[in-house]
Image 1 (cartoon, helix red, strand yellow):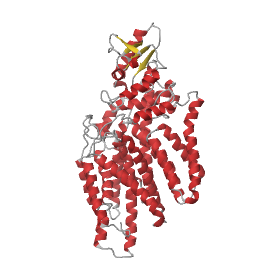
Image 2 (cartoon, helix red, strand yellow):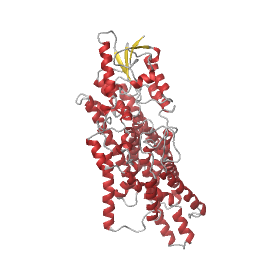
Image 3 (cartoon, helix red, strand yellow):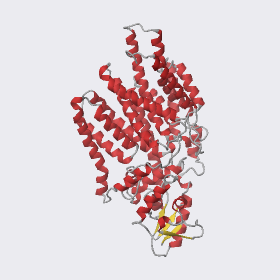
Image 4 (cartoon, helix red, strand yellow):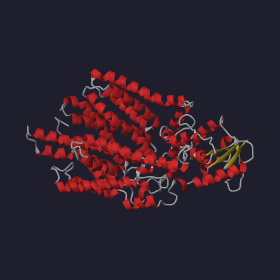
Length: 590
């Protein structure tokens, strides 16, 4: 920019950026190791629709307000699309399209119900706190009903996460309407492949919306207003202490995206407040943070099961060792997600830095800039989690909700800058180049906005969604996936060891459910459903270290555990041949 006006280089960069963004929208990611039919990218139809909308909207937005009948028709369409998205995102006990992944989250949450304490007596993979919400129901509901309650809770939390994001967007838009906020956020979040039904929705993976993204948007919903006030020189001490406490507690529940949200908010508390209140703001937030971080360890100490920091460190080390690695394909959705997030973050921080020198009375622009900086920075930190393991199918797909929020903030800033541009024109006569280059430099933002709208083409089929909810496909439920095989193995092992001295324990996935429903305790502290070559040895090592001090005489394994540990678990056990069991599924201590 020169003298507040775009130069030729800006226009050239905008054209190149738009072409790259369009290429990322157009192309479909094809991971060679994944043939599940998940959503793998937007595709050419969404790209063409986004391009058509871009031309229709003259790069950013219609120049005049729409007629009332057209507004009603568009509002009805947006509400219908959102309703279809909600319908396609409902998950139940009998309908979990990605049940192989959801076993892990359900196992984490069932821990307190069987006396297994997250981060104390076992290592949770995704969440430490949600299980305490379910634990009071263990005496009221059956084991399967508990799993059903977990599915409903996580489904609702997913909806709450999106609702928080929509609310955040509504507060930054110049026209505080719900319809525009819904249109910018909901369709791009719930993109769903029509070829595979609901299985490709982000809602199929419980850890994404309900656990990871909920953490950041909860902090945004309760804490962004205080950042804006501090930017203007106002400090609310009690509120800031409360926000700090929530940040600390959230970090325990989601030790990847929750911790990233905590770090991001702390960074903004360091930078955003005006100098007269900066040090006091830091002190109040750090006080609340210390309280929040101490709450869970103190709670565990109070119930007689102190925090095991080695468990926390073990999983952090495991997650950094290539756990669940999968290649990022280029071209593909990564060319959409990463540029939007990084450029939005840069724009947010640039506006925060520049605001004292420009139009200092525009509080709405301050809100948009600070929201953009927080959501963008949190997303950038969260992207680190996907290095060497992010593919489009529900991996980078989880970043689409933050992308929608970032695009909405950018659109809000652009709409306000257009108003400023019109006021500047009243004071001077712009050249033809000024008008043309101004439009060209807005192409990337306009294309991103149109992508949010065009994502409606990937809305779930409501008829298919309803049919699958009422009549779930075979093998698509919690009880029909691999529990029958596990239950059969446990029962045969129990029959064989009945009357023999020594206890029988279980090693494998869903170990907390096995303890709850089949009354066979487990020596497992961590067992993901699927182990990859990069991580299986790390999991085996963690488990074997635990078995050095915690082992039973008899051990029954799931098929996955047998594949990972072999017929002689940790060198401590020897395989026993039992009719009806794969050799090595029942083992005896040497």
